[in-house]
Length: 220
Image 1 (cartoon, rainbow, N blue to C red):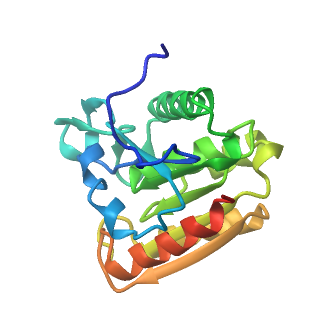
Image 2: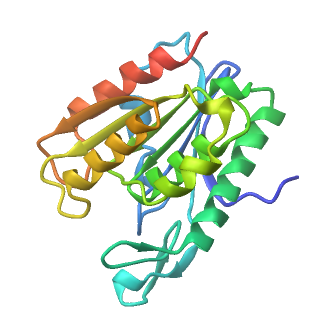
């Protein structure tokens, strides 16, 4: 069995025909987004498996070196540890492969992430060598755009990307998120942009939009 990070899994009553692998933000864990699943009100004929991995615990520079769950170390102004980032992408790829091994086609797998998790979801999705169903990037940014210009894979050149951000986000200002959106669009990716009067969080209107987008991504 592939060595996977610990995770929380929500399986549908029927055999899953699609999967959503959802990464949490800095300092949280896989429990963070588990309560959202029932509020998505997905159709009963859309049996999806949701997987919420726990990031490793590591010292984080912006927290004064205190250890916490993090997909990568980060220091101000936005210095990202690329070695950690690459490790996390590799871990996410293991989850993708496990779903494929369980019989879920790659094109029925959505990668999702909030904040730090969104960075990993974008990086992994755009580099992946098999077509995926989509990427959901919530309250996040894109520190790896230069790498993506040369390393992105043709298999996901047409992948659909859902982005959402709070206009009052004090952690990742919306201007940074809009820069990420523009960078992706310059690379010819289709981005569905959503913004809400909120901080670094998820709101009911966003959950409704996520549900609608997920329903559009799965051909069941």
